[in-house]
Length: 318
Image (cartoon, rainbow, N blue to C red; front, side, top):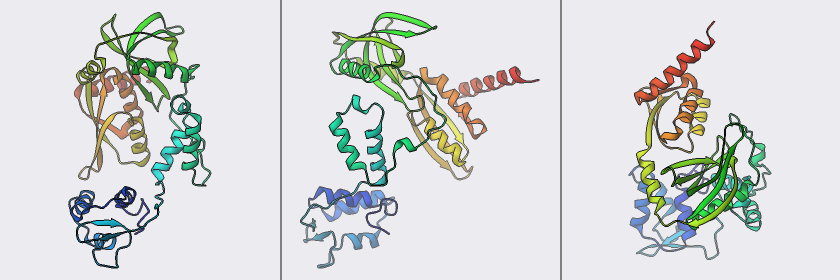
């Protein structure tokens, strides 16, 4: 077992925490944390090796009869684990980073995240992602919307999609921004006072965005209540086939979900929560998994998928 290898030691995060904390901690504290990690059981051999109370046997920490103390006087450099490094790379190379982080900070992040391997997110080929034309001045649009949300001000805009609709001079109270990895698209969630309802608008169709007068209602609380009322749940049974599992979890990565492996059936049971107005997209994604995913609940979604399959069969049968 390698002490500072996150892929081979489940106590890696615990050790990193105490080293970075650089403060004393009690015997009961470390035992409690180890039991939380180890399914409520004490790993005595690991405990004795890392947190030895015997004089002269302490490696990173020593025990002074009341608490453990950090041994090294100088700062101990804790390297980034692989997930943290990849996350930093994602932040630094994300197409929209400069809309949220200044260039100097991005350069620092790139320097910290670079471990000399020379790989880049550009080397990763993303498949099964819808190709869409990005809207112009996207970063500027995001900045204006964030400022409107931060200051609780009205968002004024034109919502235009050629050949489908053209709404000019529209106004809404913005609540939050959403980003869909699958569609590589931003949406703004907002309340439209004129229609007395919440909507989601793609930034790709927004034009002439400006900030208007302030509004005083607690729109975030209203939006939270609205989301609760419009939240639905689907339970899927998914085959444990590698490419199906990977695709399934990627498709639903931005939804609130919980997965459990059923050993008796040798299937994954995925509980997925989504918003009512995303239902068409959720159904489409489920159908894209083919026979690898089966809807267990609710009955209404089962029937919608069944009807689509029957309609497709009738359209293409000879």
